[in-house]
Image (cartoon, rainbow, N blue to C red; front, side):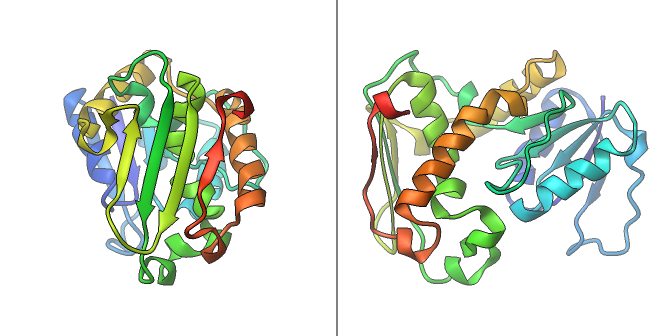
Length: 231
């Protein structure tokens, strides 16, 4: 299988290793910051992996789909911002790699404490217009897991201190994330990736709670509680 990669930041390295795990061929890497002069031949690969900033995802998905090719897409979360129309196309595979973590089938609670300082809010990641908001961008994986495990969700984002991410007593900060990506890629190649139609409810939950708890700095230090019967 031949792959192309858009974006070459931190998260892209997991994708590179997963491609190696599958003995795939990484034909090209395009990053407009690192390689501004590189030309991308999008039609020469089986999969294009999107690891660019969140606000670029939908336009890049549209561009690839409009090529009228059989190329499939693997796109990091979130594939679409809350106000963007969702594109339902089975060629799109959305990355929610924690679904492939070694977790129980059910759990009592998912507890997440994120730390984001002032520097974070000076980058595009801290701009709700570019990410969909603090809650939407940071908690998408963990709300997804809470829904799947029928668990209560408790989360907060604070300016300093220690981060923690737990499913009951399982520490998510110490799971093998590369193993999750490897398993996800294995499933994508046999047609078992996550499609847009599979996460419509997740997006609705994230959007509804973002409206309640806030999008940017106003969401800091708020304890976000969502009982399982509201997920």
